[in-house]
Length: 267
Length: 304
Image 1: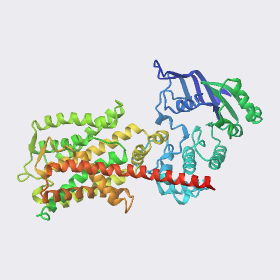
Image 2: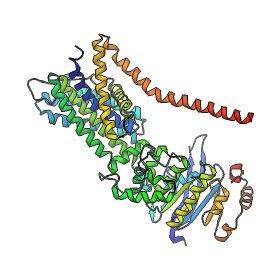
Image 3: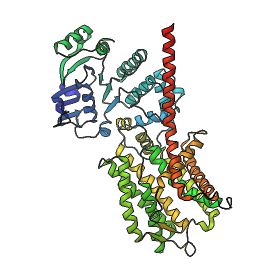
């Protein structure tokens, strides 16, 4: 199955502030693969390296050593905006994924041109607007009637749903969700998560989702990994994953000597 | 006497309006406080004056001045993106470089343009004509920028200024866009400098001193007026030009009152400082009020 890997991290090493008192080794010869069509949930305590994993894949941080492959392409040396061609991203902070002073439809138009050369053609066309209206209607938030409203006027949940739509409006090779429901209230979070599952199933998106919520990690996707101090300490998929309980995960955490905090347990 | 000076004030305001639109692009669209402008406005004036003194056609001289301004913007952009220098410092470095460059261009501290003997596009000798020409210039500039910021590249530049994280995630080359924005901005500023040198009949090494403050003042005044009416981009730009006019009418008023004009730069800076502080204070004040309301609500719950 290794030949249909969408994402491959080979021998990746990353140290922050090397040679200083604040030196922090996050990854040492870290390896990770995601196969096409997989939906992987990632859990781990603070400082386990799960956010760094995202940032290393996106190119926010360059790696010290190792290789990052997206499909056949070696992206290790590509800057963030060039890797964006392959990636759809939703951040934890709802403010981060959208442009607040621009209209809803303009934000979608920006996302629709991800990975394409931008020219002096119109930034948004009439034909696109119809398409965006249909797509927005799927969110069920009434945003299709507010397409010219500035995104800054939307609530956190609305912005996060819009960001998710932007991340997937042009099918990405890999969808990266970085605790994208963590900053939302429980009701909104479950709505956004439901839409996440809907849209990933509909487009058969290969997805990596970081979460603090163990129940979500078990319920979503077909594979779960647990990270601790820059290592994958537990990697489970198929029926074994389906039959997991939060108690099992907590047990695994304790075995690894990791501290378990309330935020992970209280779902 | 005050009203006699109006055509002059309006034409100066319109010329500075072009400069203020340049400032608007960096300060408002790109969220980049660009201090290059103090130097690039003089570069525009110096290039134009020197070329015209050598007998070059006024339009061609302006074109070269605009290109020189774009180069100044490019330099600041490279300082910021390639050298990793903070925005404000990048602008100051270019400004300092331009001081020497401007002196070298002119070979002295100022250069005269023969407004009577040669063809000039605008001149204070004919303020009415200048107003007409400047309205034409502004219509083309506002129209052109309105079109440009609606294109794919233009939308990318707006997103860059608004949310660089999101822009990178959407595959937008943030560094390239900053450079493009700085080049357009300084090209416009140099255009204003070139027009100003023709209008007043000379370029002077000090003509750009404090230009950023005049530009910001025009942007703030324009915004205060237009934002109430519409958030339309073209109207915002027109409002900035209007801000330039109002600035120079106030300037004339100060002269008419026979107040000491040496204080004018100080007043301008103070007014800009206050206008910049207002949104900050508003936010602070409202946040406090919200907290009070929240505390009151909680108190109520406890009592219940």
